[in-house]
Amino acid sequence: MKTALLRYFLSGFSCLAITAQAGSVFAATFEESVAQAKTAYDAGDYNKAVELLIQANRLQPNDRLLLNIARSYAKAGDCARSVAYYRAFARSDESEASLLKTAAKEAEDLKCTSFNRDTSGRITVDSVPTGAKVLIDGVEAGVTPFEAVLVPKGKRTFRFELEGYEPFERAVGVEVDTDQDVKASLTEKVEEPVVVETPVEEPVAVAPVEKDMTPYYIAGGVTGVGVGLLIMGAVYDLSVIPSTDDERKQYAPDTQKYKDLTDQRDGEATIALVGYVGGGILAVGGAAYLTYLFLTDDSGQKEDGSDAIEKRLGVVPVVGQDTVGVGLFGQF
Image 1 (cartoon, rainbow, N blue to C red):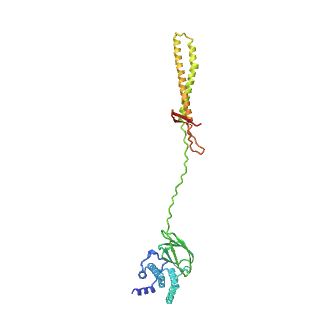
Image 2: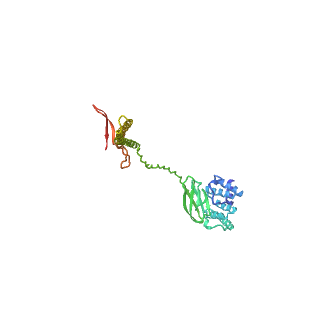
Image 3: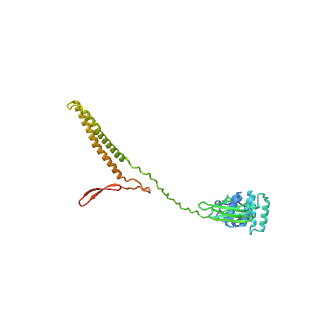
């Protein structure tokens, strides 16, 4: 019963579409596709019937399916696609002569002015894996597997795109009144390892450290104070005290004025002594400290810019058979 139904359906049914997407599959077998297509056709759902018939033809090619597709497009009011599939049926080597005459008359009766013979080819588009979006000359045409008609003749670019796969393009010379297959085998994308470049650290210019001049200032100040005290002692010794002596000579030793001047002279002599002793100690100590600082200065730079450590004066322990002590070494 089912076989007879299919034969009847194949001889008197009609269907067509420019695309039949992989996501629009309704049945898994040829018989199921044809049976469901007839149900859709009887219900007036011609587009669904087209998809099912194209699917059936992909599972088991049959020239009568092309005729049914042409008749279905005629029912749907799409005369251009209808004529394209009538011509595809006429190109089939297995088409019966009686059906060829019938198909030619049906196509002529359509009086389709929108059909252009330059778009009379039929293209079956597929990919491995399926489900790839296909663009023809940049215009989306369908998702594999599908059929395309009304594609203008000439050189066309078919681009296949599928997530996780490299895009694939191929140029196809579309011909009139010709059935063509366009297939693509897609290559999975290989994620390239991310190379993390280690930044090269540029040498950081280090500002030269300024030498602490405080010890030099202190030593210089002490020396200066010492010299000042020495000068003061000399002034008192050479000028102030002699002046007081000259004035004291004007009075008798037993007078109060003489005693006052004597006390004054003693004070001036003390000041002079303090100036000599204190100034000498400070001046000698400050000068010695300055000399020590200079001799032990280890600052400076080599010609290449690196710090130079050059001790000019140092102290080392000295231990011998009969001697224990320290010794000075210097570089001048």
